[in-house]
Figure 1: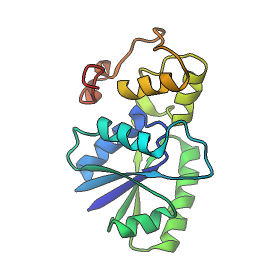
Figure 2 (figure 1 turned 90 degrees about the vertical axis):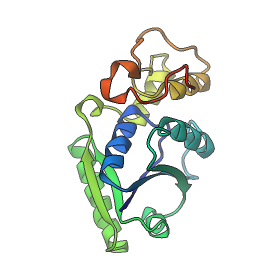
Figure 3 (figure 1 turned 135 degrees about the vertical axis):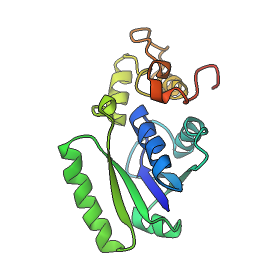
Length: 183
């Protein structure tokens, strides 16, 4: 069974990666699908995001990274996927995600949406939060993999803040993500 995990991933966070890792244990394959949305002004290009995600998920052999535009359901059908994987952080996410799941069901009855509750330590985390912190000079080292933190700091013409030296090495179940030395 193939699951599509769609999103903008601008940037991908440790919360996203936790969901991908957990999804990879549940499904035969997970396709992390970066949505190409011409109406948004992303921090990173689609190509940059694909490369960032590939590096962050290289330890997961059943995870593939791709991009698409248009309807997620159409992309899932093209990939012969049976599941759309979505994360839920809060009740507000549930309302939006449930509406999307029902809408997608009207487009294809063959594709199910599966929700995974976000791990507690990431329940506050979003790409927008990461960008906001970085924009104002805060450390994002504890929110994204090290190679992505470096990319974010470059975008904002900053050096890595020493305000929060926490890295993924201090989060036990995420130690398999690349370290600065591997990037």
